[in-house]
Length: 253
Ligand code: G
Ligand code: G
Ligand code: NA
Ligand code: MN
View (cartoon, rainbow, N blue to C red):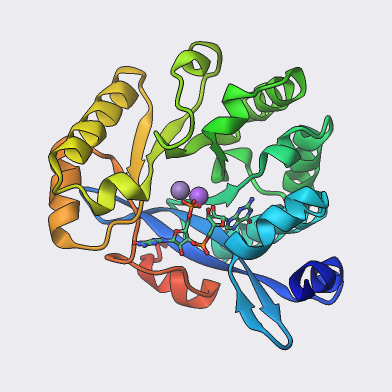
């Protein structure tokens, strides 16, 4: 396909860019993180969503170099925001299992942070449950090193994969992100029950709990009632170019 063919040159042609979507404190409304979301500006097809090319990039292993570009670009942006006087939030980057399976992944992250002079605590990595369920030694070692460095690890789309709590016995993570599908239908009793249960579990484990895909005030109220700590979604902001996303943050001097 055209996508498959053109993806090979997208990185070197500079066709990728990042949008940022704020994650806010559920009670204060303050921005606590900016999630970097990859976009591909195709010269003929226009903007292409990652759902259409990430799977191909994973299959062809290009996700390794694209993922590294995402990490470096997001960290540079975060550094720039800090230099501009914006504080109080971190940057969140989605990481594919293929990246975590690279023996040198933690080293790559370490080098990027060093090169940019960004403190590790300002970086959060969002990984899916599959990573942990199918965790191999390499993945475990990478996660261990990242944690040791001070990088935060968040489980994305929590509750949607072949959820098994077993991995929670073995890995210390920093937070759970409740999948959008539970949030959008939170009026349906079973979804509210699931959100309550995930929040309870998270808090018992001393983890931060984030809900994504919040689109209405009603959903927000429900999530606050469940005890969610952080929220994200179109109700607050869609993913935006960095200069627009930062307008949601109050400068501190
Ligand atoms: O932002 P959007 O809704 O178009 O994202 C669609 C999917 O692509 C989401 O599942 C999101 O996690 C994933 N995604 C977005 N950016 C990245 C990225 O930089 N790396 C990886 N691995 N996935 C991403
Ligand atoms: O899988 P992941 O959580 O990384 O997916 C992020 C994607 O979710 C982003 O590409 C973004 O476009 C999308 N998204 C963010 N907020 C909302 C929302 O409130 N509603 C819906 N339907 N999608 C959202
Ligand atoms: Na994510
Ligand atoms: Mn998600």
